[in-house]
Length: 174
Image (cartoon, rainbow, N blue to C red; front, top):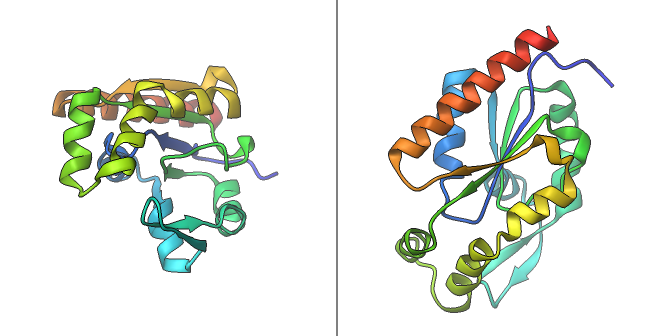
């Protein structure tokens, strides 16, 4: 495997916690490449059917992994997705699980047009720490970190923390 000059970062968490906002800003501040898995799947039609209950396409996880594998081995990628156990453990140097207060999350998802079962299931996912537990099972516990994502101040603090971590990683590995 090639030696990477820049780290790979996974931003994960329930829909609505702020992954995309954080990821795009982080890419601007660090020069890392931002990849939103939903956008990647849409552009490449990396789907395997449609889920009528949740009213969304079903991701073809194998095709997504195949599509990203070479880019990930080069390093310098921020991946944004609400799941994490589909990605190979070797891809990421650090994993950040964003967490949001349930009441605030409910409001954010409602504003996105989530209703019924889709809304309830996503809020329950946050209540039960489903994504955090998934990350802890899929990756080495030492690289998985939870970050609060409730306020603009939280986001700025998270940005500063991740930028600092990225700079330190690059000093340590180059």
